Length: 361
Image (tube, rainbow, N blue to C red; front, side, top):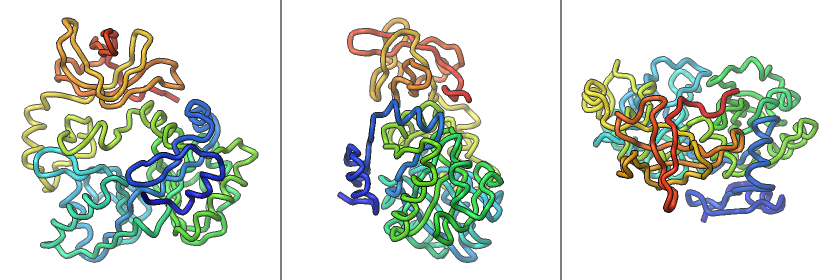
């Protein structure tokens, strides 16, 4: 099992450690609900250095990215980031990712930890005929997510740049926590604002310590992966391996907004036909009408008890105090306000299809 550069730091802080995507990762420190509320109300810091980073460079870089990704990377200018996905050849998704335009012919692709090797091989396969320069930086770089409504104010003392001026899905490369050339990106997986910072493994302990020091007066705390999951689910953000995978299409998953048919990309012809006819099933968000907690792989049933789908992500929402979840159902059940039932042991509990996000600021 791999460690991040901060594994011993997490252990010394009393974190509960678990295996995740081949890494020894902190799942919680003081409990998921308390950590969740910290991020929603003030500021928290996550070590998510298990994520993968690929550098795509050279005059053919954009051509390669346009071929393998669903979104339109020609819309990116230097200092902007874009959410996208890598479609496979059979209608599913290899991975979802964020693409950063660092320089005119330099792009950083940030991918999920569990898919690093798979993504690299998939992109490399298409690069054989294109010839962009590719480098896997995953083992060399660390990633901290500093998230919450007080993140900008708490972190401003650590940089000479005006952090408030960095708008959502924009980034700068500058000084942060005494380190030069840190990527400071106004992105995250929580829906509560903040930054993600990329630096070298040898630098991240200094950054971590200074982040906790600068945020002390704002109530900053280290946050584990369990709260990261409840936070992202309240926003309805897809988790690869749960809500999207090799067998779910971007259109079924509600990712049509990052699937641009103004260009040709992997499997774009088949996906275009799917868009034309409409997907047969859709990923929906639901809230339980009854008391209960939906969990991944629970059956979704209709009023007669017939199975119509499956829960892909579910939890008791710390912010809303009710059971929430995502799951695939036939399109006829996907309309907002539709009634479905979640099979929890012997009981089919009533649920309502709702509009995302669950948590509204």
